[in-house]
Amino acid sequence: VNSDPLARVRGAVAAREAAGLRRVLRPRPSVETILDLAGNDYLGLAREPRVLQAAALAALEWGAGSTGSRLVTGTTELHATLEGELASFCGAPGALVFSSGYLANLGVITALGGPEVAIVSDAGNHASLIDGCRLSGSPITVVPHRDLDKIDAALASTDLPDRIVVTDAVFSVDGGLAPLTELHEVCRSYGAVLVIDEAHSLGVVGDLGRGAAFAAGLAGAPDVVLTATMSKALGSQGGAVVGSQRVIDHLVDAARSFIFDTGLAPACVGAAEAALSLVAKDSRLSARALANASLLASYARELGLETSSPAAAVVSVVIGAPAAALAAQALCAEHGVRVGCFRPPSVPDGRSRLRLTARADLTDDQMATVRSALEAVADQTAPSA
Ligand SMILES: Cc1ncc(COP(=O)(O)O)c(C=O)c1O
Image 1 (cartoon, rainbow, N blue to C red):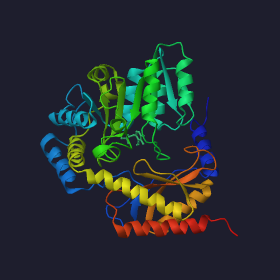
Image 2 (image 1 turned 90 degrees about the vertical axis):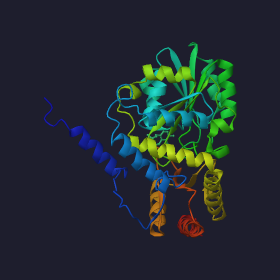
Image 3 (image 1 turned 135 degrees about the horizontal axis):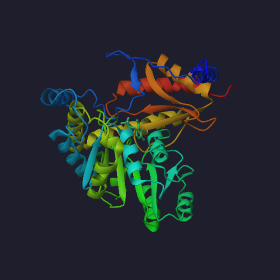
Image 4 (image 1 turned 60 degrees about the horizontal axis):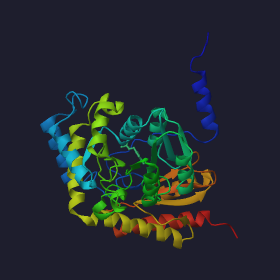
């Protein structure tokens, strides 16, 4: 008999403690003086008055919760409206709202995959895509980041006729864009479905922020399935799958994370719908996020820090060792800027980095504050003479 059923957990906690890898929750107050570049509110819509009002009105009209799963009572007319608008914004026939982007990814990959379906997945994919692949029971080949030849080889080497390639459109850690046009060509040559996660590209990339697939001319392609989240550029919560009506209908029947989950709360649906309407009307929102991202990356480069040209609102500044990245993050906080920090296993050894969100609503003064913070980081990380 195990006298201490949680001994293993204690051991795991101690091991993480010793490796400096404990994670800590830090509840934030509603009003803060620090400039937040760690969140994913790319367009600054999470507190936009029209978005907030839509959330409040939706709650007042439809209730605090959706009251049930989507197939029972959890589908309001508001959910249907949002689905129609998401589909038309992305240029696809249909859309289905899930209660998070994570669950949308689990749902679509498990419903399209299975032991008879080969999946090829980019090594840089988000955890929700990875978990969807694992849960699907499909044979999975993980290929090196953005490596088209390896994807081609993986598709060629399977005997299974049904194949899926899964990729982020914009990778959450390095902010780089997947080569979607080329990926689609490879998929087409093998009759494979291409699943693209637009979490970091919806609202930011392409005309009006219609997403990376739209920008690559893949909108509405029958062999392309998009997933998205409303928790980033749209400032709300919730996820969605966008694609052909055949895929959407299949998900309603087969996606367990859709069927066995309470529908997205009306306030989130209302907020997402209002945010989407603002994005669809005003190309300045996505343009400003992209311009701020280029500017932040140019500051970093001028200061001798390692960064790449951002494809969306994510700017990644490589620091190196995990402790140095944490120190750089703390230095930014001292200079009034909260930034994200990625360490192994989220990034390869020696590639720990800061992650800055180039929000569309940053003022010139705030951009100057970020520049000062990066200057301090550059001074701290510069090799001593
Ligand atoms: C690429 C990617 N996909 C999916 C998700 C999950 O979306 P959500 O937060 O809505 O569950 C995230 C982040 O959270 C993400 O970065």
